[in-house]
Image (cartoon, rainbow, N blue to C red; front, side, top):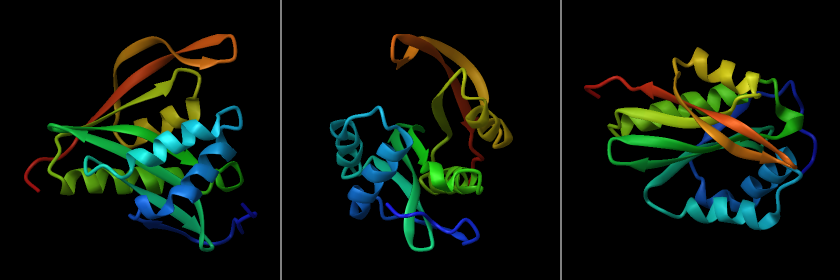
Length: 161
């Protein structure tokens, strides 16, 4: 994956299934400790009708994605990821906004996610989008020998769309 020009404008697209290799590349660039098998599991999910999301491109290169799973009246954010070289460009916010709009279009009532308690940047992104903390999962994330708790957050979606 080459370097994107940070001055370019990011664009959001909805074709997840067609972008498996690019999604896997972004995932592995953001999480170098992960195995390719984990990235492939994520992209296999995109073939399900219950899974939806968006990709972000910067100068025609995929630099981020968000993947959600709808279940009943809610959606779970399975993964939101921006390549390290494209972070701090507002791409995460664009992806989250697209996910909210897609969820409203699917007539869902809420979106739920987990975020590591030590990931202040992601928590700030979610709080600015009106997600609120509703719980905690002890030792949800494994980082080497350390276990990190996850905050469970939820956003109620507007009705009547």
